Amino acid sequence: MKMHMVFRFWTFSLVILSLAVGAGVAFGQEDVTKHPSCSYCGMDRAKFAHSRIFIEYNDGSTFGACSIHCAAIDMAVHIDKSPKAIGVGDYGTKKLIDAEKAF
Image (cartoon, rainbow, N blue to C red; front, side, top):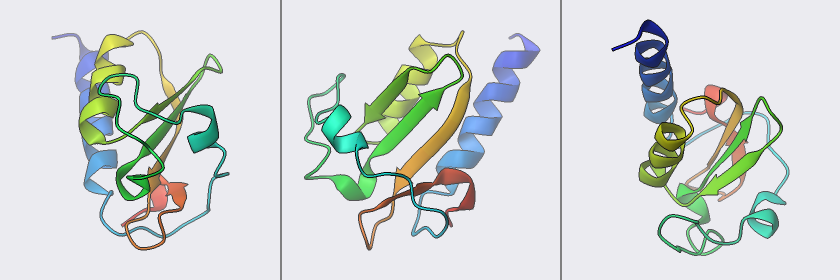
């Protein structure tokens, strides 16, 4: 396994561990308007706002996932892209927050 792939795996794993109940800087809530449903499974991201994930890649593209599972699929499919920012749904408020500051 290439070193950058191992690094990306562990970086993403640490972000995923921070998905419990979060705190931090709020992202804009337009992610659900831009990506109303998950492109992998079709789940309604507004209905499941507490588990949604929003990934902004360095190339300017974005992806809205319904869950950790579909976010991991997208990152695996787009292994050549680096995430610039990842937002996760806060379980209590259902607002999107910075994954690096979630706990």
